[in-house]
Image (tube, rainbow, N blue to C red; front, side):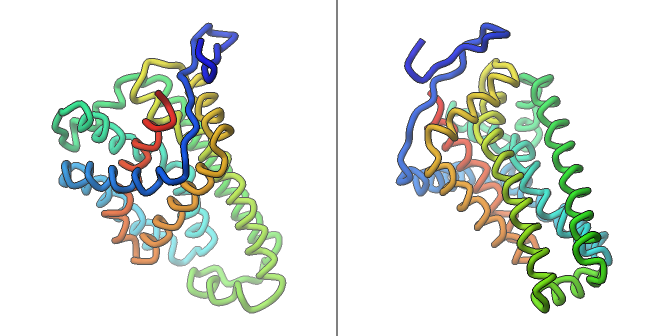
Length: 258
């Protein structure tokens, strides 16, 4: 085994080799992601449109329940890595010189399907747990806060109590999102790309994060910043930004794992 490889004691599987990368690669990932988007615009933008529609539907149905809206939107960061699987497949096929359609990209999930399903269930559980925790924080720490979204957003900055709630909420959600990011940043594309088990994929992702903490934190910040920018455009910006980030994340994976 190489210096950056490890063996799973239970299954005997050899984990893929993990490499150190420089933060200067982040712009290159975005440029490569843009190239993939331009090469496969219809399939890529179809995913972006689905993300935008989902965000608008959340807004419509949760408008009168600000707690639920904030939990659902923030929970997006927890499940987005798996939802971007089709974009990873488009990038994988593009690198191999193969064209992609939206439906062809969905077929990539058939490879390693049991592991991907298990990971999806894990992320769904995390998302549900976060929704429950988020709602409990608002109800326990600020029971008088207005329930509707506009009232909630207007009330949060007005008192120290509400500001403390916002800080605790952001801290809790940020820690949870960072843990999910560390587990999934490599594991999802790895499961789509190679025949490895879920435990090996998750351990490889954690090793990649541990070997490149500053780069991974910087990449996570870029992902959050561009996603929030998409939210700020009433989700319409996600039509382009989510495919861009999905394709760029594939190139990040290809740099980290050889």
